[in-house]
Length: 258
Image (cartoon, rainbow, N blue to C red; front, side, top):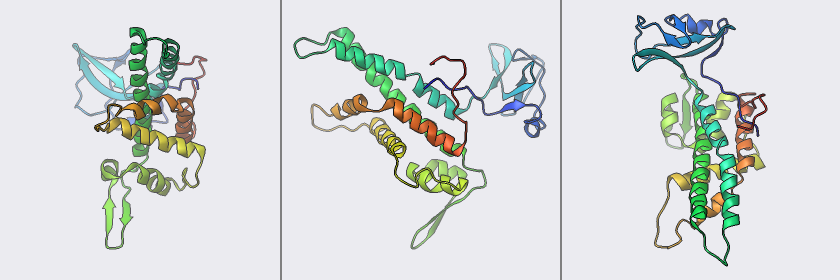
């Protein structure tokens, strides 16, 4: 899978973003640097306009004496990209580890480094890719949406912020997102569904690493990392997200892998 296009939370032409820009303080910007005379309240929105008229919305930030405007990247795509760029390293470390290890000799220090790096980057992949799904799910919840959890003795109501903080992943993907969008990715069992649920399980194992009395307590984590289907899983996540928001995760047309 080629690397994806970089997108920002607020981007488009001035016409497309007019409802948002009309609420902004216009800032005199040259190459992303605002005039030192510019003053703006914290939390307000500024924007950078390119020569072609394309606009990126962001926030004003003073760094080393300069008032800069930082466009806000889309968190879902950042986390997805972070997972994606680890793929090559994971594959290389595992192959190196196999080539440097056997039962007739010893695992020398370079091999030890490959093992450490392999599991480290595999953990980054798992955590970042799952976080990408979580960020996407939360971004799809309208501010005025209320989730009703009907039980036999009571009905619990959750607003959009409470949903993000207190509702579990399974409820979000199987109940809340379908209720909001009118369609469900998990209506029937598929290979992609299984890959996403395996991702969730592995992520939980990493985040909530458990200890016990066995000297080989972590061998299951290493075993999962070795057997995990990285390429197929990241493709499944892209398919899941694009099911609800078509062309949201797009392959860049530059021809480069990463």
